[in-house]
Structures are given as C-alpha cells and as structure tokens.
Image (cartoon, rainbow, N blue to C red; front, side, top):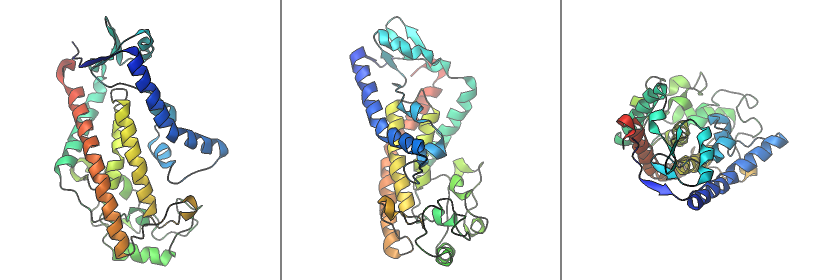
Length: 296
C-alpha cells in the first residue's frame, strides 16, 4: 500500500501545473522559435540538443511520489502507466516502476551519494572547451559560426601550459586526440561513479539529466530547478571557452589569465553550492523509489 503524505485539491494542483508551464515555456518557446527559423544558439539550445529531453516533455507537470491529485481532472494522468486511481484520487504508484529501471536508480543513488561525500575539486579552470578545439582549424571546431578569441597556436599554448585535469568522462570524450593525452586523468565510462565530483560544472549540469531520467516519478519542480541550474552553468561554460560570443551578449571569462581563472573558480564554487540541495533532493527521491513495496 502506498504511503501518501498529502492530498492536493484540484484548484491547487491545477495552479501548480499552470505555473510550471509558464516557467518552462520561458525556456522552451525561444528554443522552438529558433528551431523553426533554422537558427542555432550555442548557449541556450545546448540543453535541448545535448540531453535530448523534448520541450514538450519538460513542460509536462508531475507531482512526484506520495501526492494524491483530487478532482475529476486528475484522471487525465492515468494515460501514464505509473499512475493509479484510488478511491480518493489519482497518484503515482512506485510499485509500478519497471523492474528493469531499478538497477539504474540504484546506480544513480551510488553516483550521487559518492559525489556528495567526495571532496570537491576546483582547479580545472574550465579548460574542457579549450581541449575540445586543441589542434583544430577554425572551420573544424564545433561552433564554427563564432570566432575563437585567440589564435589556434595560443589556444594550444593555454591547454598545454595549464594543468588539464578534467574528471568528467562526458567532457573528456570530446577532447581532441591531441588533447586527451595531456589530461592528468583518463576518465572512462565505467569509472564514472568513482571519479565524478561535485566541483565539476558538467557533473552539476548533469543533475538535470538524472532528474528527467526519473520522470514521471521526479517532481517537475525538481526537474525545472535542475534545468535552471544547468542553463546557468552552460553560460559560465561558454563564457570561459575560447569562443568569442560577445555578439550574443556574453562577456568572456578569460581563463587564460590569472584574474579570469579566479573569476571562473568563484562562479564554479557558487554553482556547486546551488547544486548541493538539488543533489540532496535527487538522493532522497532515489531512496524513496527504492523503498521496498512502495513504502516511504
């Protein structure tokens, strides 16, 4: 039998649903409008193109576990098999999590608790984007619509002279072949749970990915909060990159200078602090979803 913590009257959850859509459409509508025009934005479109969670899915509102939705309109949620109708309303039933998904949730719980307990590292200086263009010509880089702030030889010098110590596999795998051997660590896919650390901006950006992978059991407020953090981190990421995005309104964080590296670390630490409560909420959600017999 499900443990239910609260009931939401129909007017209350309809208000939450509407507020969520207004919040999320401020992100999804501009992206879809650009896509319709055939335009690409290297900062604001990244979360949609890299993670692949569709705007329509992001707009959907789910209350999360242990909430009963009251009123006749709640029956619309029954189109998702994770929901069950009760005498008093409609609610998610954690017993309906497919057995094949439970190993992933357990893996994610291990990953997130390891990140929580592992010391944060703040010495990477955002060099991952530089390592992704190391040794490439200007026409070969990922965002070739925008110029590099420094000549290719200077980009190479920065990568080669500063410590390259990326711990995030999904950044490291995009390093150019000439940059990968320069990294002090050689991350692997299988080694992610042992290496991921909470000071990494990409690891904190990925909280959005982990949240939406738990949908519809993840509360949509949590998914949106993680998206908002990831969006802000992407801006830091690209401002610290070798690309010149001033035409888009982004002032560079010149990590090739001591002052720029100090500024980057300040922003990195602030983003890490913002990520802590989101990670805690995701860990608590994993705990809840793994509880035996759907008990809380």
